[in-house]
Image (cartoon, rainbow, N blue to C red):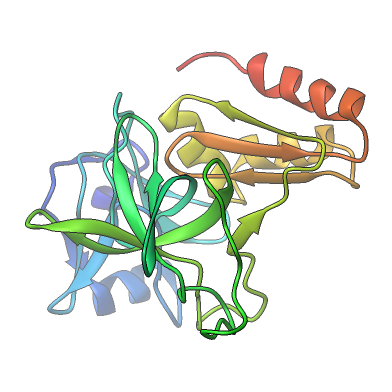
Length: 223
């Protein structure tokens, strides 16, 4: 199918095709939708401009290279707490983009038992509300995930760096050749979290190892 070529370019709001037709053409029981795409009225529709891409595991997603991150529904991001406002945290998603995180928006959180975040703390979260007339909102809950990795990120031997958003998009798609290369390069006992907003959290058993990993990311070619 020509419209599924990796070189196909789409504008926001365009239909890639009917979901049922795409499943048949790709020989899939279920259509896996990644960043930049959504299912609407039985069609796969783009939410951003860019090139349609298909990962080796048959996940469809849009590859684009924005200079400024704009939150999209279900994006997984790294956010920094910048202010505490009663029952929610104000967080920075980068590029002066702010959002809010409810204090109970954590797995198994209750009014008595919940993470106690302070200004400067980092969280790995998912964008759950995108509305031009309302503040962006993120959550650290993901009922659809068997092992939810969303939540606070430890500050022990950790480092936060910013990378090109285009590069972050490729790394988030775990079955791309770039993510496989990175997996082979990194030690097994380190913790790497990539936000689609271009922020990367790096933590390792020692500071020296953490800085070695930071160098790997900084040596990636710029896009």
